[in-house]
Length: 502
Image (cartoon, rainbow, N blue to C red; front, top):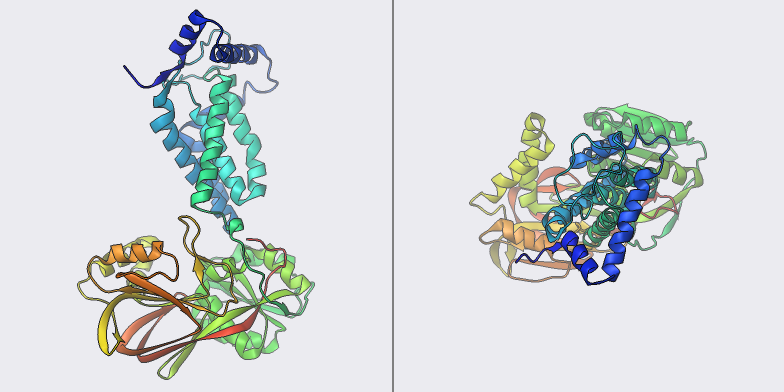
């Protein structure tokens, strides 16, 4: 005897036993289907069957996600990724539980006009509707990350769901159940992977910065290699009197210094390494910094709450700014600054391998190759002196501010002016991949045989082996001997709109 529920057999049994609530519900469902079949849907004959077909196997939603990602805005890309993840979760649930747990025959097509019917009829069970689940999951997932994109997709998702009744392949209850399951999958994913808007940031110290209504006095230096021409043009349109300086990566330092000499505010567009260089110059000249994200990850700009040119232009026009922390490092005779993270051990080695291969095979494959090579190495990449004896380490991580985890999402900073260094150590030993994953999954202030963490405002490392690679804000340098890290509280003034919530 099968444990699955067969709605068709159950309905027949219910009718023979009397008018049960389920029997009445199924009868109502059938009458609604017949009413929809006889109802004239203006203009739908040419649109809904094709729309229904385009949603097969999620093709419509994958194409929509690609178009959203092509917009090059961080929020649209996150919304597209969340929509696809929600769709995948809903589809997995439908195919593994929904279709196999409830067996229901497809509707009889007799009352449905031939012009509406699909050329290829589905052969799976009817309950619940997979198309409706996918449509609701994708649209809801997108809306949770970007309400504007969600509002634009809602009519399309509704039309896909309606097309399943219109073409006669589902009862109305199949569509409603599928839509509820899809929306539920999107909300479940939000609990596991919170949206950026869910991260409650502490109010940062407000700072005085010049208001530049048309951008006069703002000089923006952009890394030509970062491929941000569209974003720069949009910023120029929003702030027409701002001066834009485009240059090659090797010219960034010189152009930033020249710009600082004539600017009221220093702007920068590029990745975290370019922003790091601009922050050093802005601190040296006592200028506020305007950051337009233009790299791959843009950790600093996104943690700050500046996602695109609209956020930045609004802050510059009204002189809205905050103060954030920076960290100074001293290693022998060299000195530097970082805004995000600094690390020694596995990660700098990975970056070296990635940079060596990225121009040949691409950034992500090169990063995977670097991880495999580093984790399979027989030697520990770092040794430090603890209690008078040298001990191996896989990783020493230092964050400018405490990184918090929510659900399964990567750590994020909710406060860029907390005055703290987030120091985490992964001890040496066997199975480095498991140790690193355990450290990544654990929150701050944890301690175990594999990893530990502490929060301080100053850190001194001694006995660093000469030539040890150190990575900071995406850059790599070699250090030796003693390395000192010191927090610079509220050292940098950065433009940020007061209304930014994500």
